[in-house]
Image (cartoon, rainbow over all chains, first blue to last red):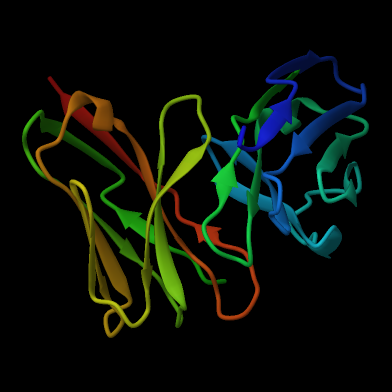
Length: 112
Length: 111
């Protein structure tokens, strides 16, 4: 298996622009997680899905953030409009039945 | 909220020495997991220890769990420069809920 795939790996955008991050979980996994990592705040869970259904989005910082999982093999995290404080590394992870999580390589987002 | 807290925040050792990292958590757990993160990469699962286990080994890794003290330790024996990374503990609350990660221990192994 190729593991969790994220795209793009790097994104540089200007404040106010829309940003879409993409994730393909490991085939057969039924849970998907979106995290944000910064030096100041560490690793934060933004939202997670079980069987394509959003379960808890309490970690989503603002209404500017939204996530979807239209099917078992694809998820997106969208920021609209983006702000400089959104600069971080965004990770997607998947797991099977709540066991160990497998992380993607991350998307490094820079908002100028 | 339930959270694992690693100690120390940073650790620097010579190659060949053992490295010990500790994790404390707040409430009852089903299992505790340790992850490693190399600079600029995603986290990688190392080992999972269940609440009814006291010790587990995987290669040069040894994990202990003391549920009475709500703590765990990760021992890396005969460390190598390639072990340089950040190490996180993570605990899932009971039920089908996601992991909560600590802030990690940054380990530097000097050749």
